Image 1 (cartoon, rainbow, N blue to C red):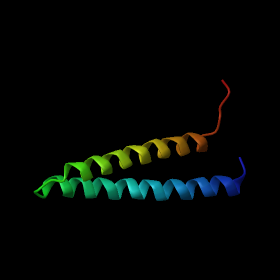
Image 2: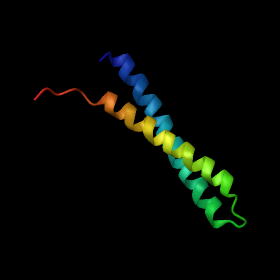
Image 3: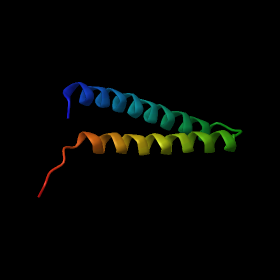
Length: 68
């Protein structure tokens, strides 16, 4: 893998991980502050799940293939 491409992936991964953490905080605050907007909560949880999938995809690209 090209080191420039790997660096780009790592940068994108860091951004996605930060956004995932931020969403986690927002969701926690939203759930504890009445009245709870369940539609917004559902949208945020869906976005968080999409981010998790993207993060896993990038992490798998960064792990080198090992032939056993």
